[in-house]
Image (spheres, rainbow, N blue to C red):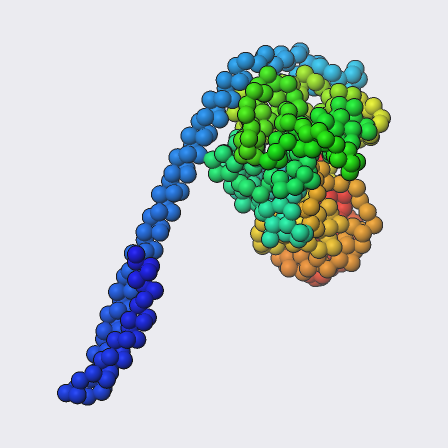
Length: 572
């Protein structure tokens, strides 16, 4: 009732003013107006009081709703945890780590070294290389010079493990570093990013999820299942036959590591595991009714009921009359620990993220004729992931602490992958990985002392960002960005406005020009950009380039040269 009463107050006030101004002859018009003004002020105060009461009531209702939602969310988490443990108990135990050939930090290394061929034993990376690598992998930026020096001077034998723990505890930076992958994978392109808005804006949801280290199965359930606590709508599209099959294909690629799209209109030409009917049975989970068989745009009088694509002994027999029921059921089947693909495909993505190559390559093409290089390790990692409650940070910590991850890059030992060619993968050296656009620009800002938010918080699109692989729009699923270099990237490095603007705004060139010793200034420049001191040859070349009295522009040119060097652009 209060909002309705408030709506009538302006009319009441006007009526009072008119009535009092012209009623009675014993008072002067001025005194009558003065009384009317007092009454009007009193009415305003009453209205404000009523408005405050309404606002307080609304806020109290919002607080109660938020509290109820949080209680439901915690109950939902507990139920998910219970079901996960119940299903896990029915599974056979994982493979036992074998006796490896070399040193090992954890079980991962036993699986890896057991398959090493005879020959040279790989060496660990030095501390300077490791500190830069782990900063980029854990939080997406290089360390600043003081962080490098603190780590290099630390004599503690467990300092690498301690550094990993401290980086993973930087929750905001850890979360924002995951944003670029998941926005690409989920086609997050609402009003915050260019394109036609084929998906919602998932950025806040992604950041919140990784900030709290949300279990992976809960994260996925909130995207797919309308009955999930804190459901994040906008991912499942099901208004038309086309939208339903596209959603199914996207879910298969992102959460199951399977390329199904070609089977949406005919039997898959390259993968016999995907006849069209099998795919449409899966796609029917994402439609309000059974999907019609439409082969190459020709409609057939056959409709495919929802059928899950993997036999996990946990499907069938349920009546699915509504879209909501179908989505809840397919979500349950996807995140089920007995589903062989859910955990396996994700730990394979983690392995590629930190090692440069997956145990299965390509990471979105799991199939019988594309076996993993280390099947026992992949199985063990998947079981470890599920048994620790789909805890992503636990798996990241495990991989980063392994000796396999910490090995020195050696081009003679590094593995490679080419489609159609069976190159063995031993993981005796990490692969060379190019920095993502976000890693490159954020790290450059750290090195040069440019203040500002991390790239992943905004949606800047320039010639430089596009040449570094950041998509201008996200209308197609992308789980792996291209690492190939192109001429346009070299042109952007040489002539691009964006890179020049960053260098112009940098504090470091001014600071270096004021150093009393050019040699110390060169040391500082290398430590800031490349996270190491220059070699004797680099020092000599730099001093020859920087004549006595070198100014800000000369130092800016030197820093530009370091920033566009392969050593800065790649994780080594």
